[in-house]
Image 1 (tube, one colour):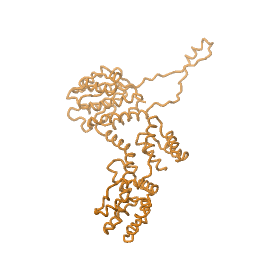
Image 2 (tube, helix red, strand yellow):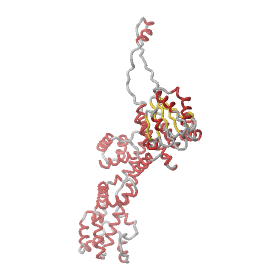
Image 3 (cartoon, one colour):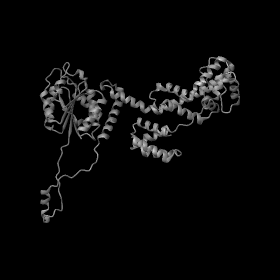
Image 4 (cartoon, helix red, strand yellow):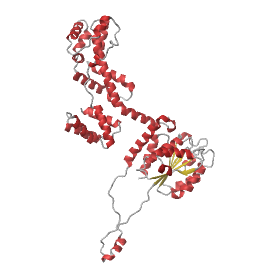
Length: 477
C-alpha cells in the first residue's frame, strides 16, 4: 500500500498538484495512522495533507476516486463475453468449436478431468497444471490473480506508461512476469499432438490476455493523462513561437498562464518583520514642546523608495509579431508580482499601448496593438519616438525590455538614443527571436545594438522566455 500511495502521489504531480517530499512523508504517516479500512476517512485525511487550494482539492478527489476504485478482475466473466475461438488456433473442426464453446468455470470437473487426462501425454501441460498461475485460472481465484497482476505491473514499471503505443509492450511484460510463457509452451505442444485439450488451454490463455490488456488500458488512461499533457506542454514550450499552429494557440496561452502562476508563486512578496528605522529626534522633541518636553509621541525617519517600473518595447512587424504577442501576454499575466509595466509597440513608428490593456482583455488588447502598429520596420524612427515619450521617465529603477530582430531595412539605427537609455536605466534587456548566428547578417543591427544593452539573449520559445522573466523578477525585487 505504501508503494501504491507513492504512485498515487506521482500521479497527482502529473495533474499539477504540488506535493513536496516532506508532504509525501506526511501522507504516508497519515495513511499509517488512519489505516486503509475506511476509504472515506483515508480520502479526507490525505486531502487535508496533500491539497492546498480548492482547485487542487477538486483534482485530488477526482484522482483518488479513479486510482483507488479498481476492483478485482473476473477471469470467468471475460470468457463468457467472448464468443471468438482461440486466436492462435489453426484447426477449426466442429469438435474443436464445440469444446471451445465450453467456458472454463471454477469447479468445472469435466474440464479438469480433460486436462488431467491430457497431461499424461504432454509434459508441458503437466508442468503447467502444477503451477500456481494455472491453478488460480482454473479455480477463478480473483484475489490471487489480481494481486499477481499488480505485482507483475509493478515489476514491469507500468506506472511509467506515457503513450498509447506502449500498451502492447507493457501487456507482454506483465504476461511474462506472471508466467504466461508456460501456457504458450503447453499450447504449442498440444497443437503438435492435436490433443483435444488444446481449446481449453487456449481459452484460459485468452482469458488471461484479455484481463491483462484491460488492466493495462485502465492504467494507461489513469497514468498517461497527466504525462501526455506534460509531454505536450514540454514540446510547445520548446517550439519556436512562430511555428506553432493556430489550433494550438489556446494551449500555448494556458501554458503561459501556468508558467506565470508558477513564477508568481515563487516571487510573491513575503511578509517579514522590519525595523522602523532611526528615531527622528528633532521632530520628536518639537512635538513634545506643548507637553513640557515630555515625548509622548515618537517619530521615525522613513526612506521613501521609488517603485521600479518596466518598459516593454515590442516590434510588432510581421516577422516578430507572434513573439511580441506572447511576451506581452506573459508580462500581463504577472501583474500581481511584477512592478508597473508600460507597453510600447512599433514597426515604422512607436506608440504607448498600455491603455489597450487597461480597457480590454489581454488577448483582445494584443490583437488591437498588432493591427494598429504593424507594418514595415524602422528602428531609428521608433527609437526617436520612444525617447520623446518616455526618456524623461527612465531612471535607475527602470528596466527596459526590447523585443525585436533588429533588422532595420538599412535605415539609420540611431544607436545614440539606445546609448542614452543605457546610461539612464537600471538595465536594458534585448530579446531577439533570431538565432545568434544571424545577428549582424544582412540588414541586422543587432551587434551594434548589443553594445548598448546590459543583457541580450536569443528568445524564440516559451522555455527561454520563462527563464528570462524569472531572472527579471529576481532583479526587480
